[in-house]
Length: 528
Image (tube, rainbow, N blue to C red; front, side, top):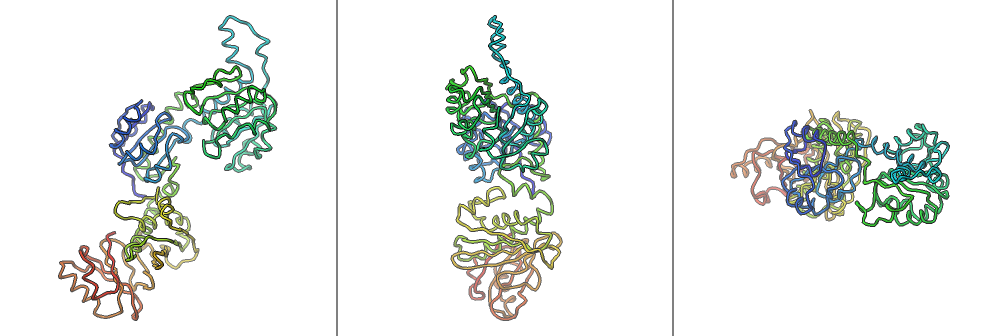
């Protein structure tokens, strides 16, 4: 994968100094402007290739629209719910976070809140400060032998589980992604939510905030829980329905809650914060010196690795791009783009594509099928005012109404493998196949014309469809010569009868293709 050029980065929040130091040590100019108002960010962001945020900066669609140069948004922490990922994806902007940076800190705070809920520690401290000695009032319960339900068994959920097992808790959980045999390996029995709720003495949530997780704990959920269940949320506000939680606290269905996050931060509605059975913190999950140092360092290193073309870690919207960081992948991507560009040029109707079928052939192409398809689409969809990349091209194809399919055939004669593409536009079908020879892309076939000598997909190329005729090359070369254009290469179809496509390598592009009409039936040119 070719390196992404990042020369300027704006840091809009307080991030560990190591972030700036690492970026600048790798030739990236950094500007720090924490606590900007939205209007200030809108005015400032247009000058930068990269943006680093934590959770306070809201990177909304209008901010992204104002960022004409932006290529990457880095969140120094887990989750990206303060970033409009869809808007960024449409613009081809990479969004990344630091998935490991604050896992330990968030897990430790969760454990501290579980223990505080069980023993009423904060309330006892405040009572002592008021000069009281209320031993009976703050009677607690042991964690030993209790069931802890963990909703979300990613990095943080796992860390919570292993720590609370040391207190003798039974750890059960739910996660639609983590395989049950994986979580069983670190002591968590998985089950569906309907089974989970009635068994829990304590519940902690560790999922991202998604449409599917909003209000995961609600009136219906609480009704299925044990009477007096205690809940903890150190993940994202909104996963627990705040109104339902308040009703459960008032009814006694919920015996206590510990909240580090809220739907609105800071919360204007203080009903939960002021409730006697609620412990609340001002979003402290990542607020440790170690987590901040780790997140600041991680986001900088991830950006540097991406700029240098080494690897892409933490990207939440660029899975195809993440798999293309190697020289071999770069060559495959170049092949896909080149074949797509040939077909885009030969679509003389210039009508939108309705269907694209990409088939890779050969064992060496097996692992590249995903980003080969995206690369082909980049060549097909590129046009003035639209520069698709591996981040946004699948979305652009979907929005354009293009049906995209891809497949793989294990067999293949060529060592470089083969990429075959068929496109449909306005009822017309075009086909092309290409391969890699010596690491360079070549065209093997265009529509029904198999080239006698593979066409090197580089430089300035003229494709012509015409009846087989020995004088075709000399006629075309003569016309080009009158325009001061030299013929640098020529590839003819192997078949010697009927209409066929040939390719002429040019010293420069022809200004007006209509001059070729007396000689050929169709003509297209492009520079690769």
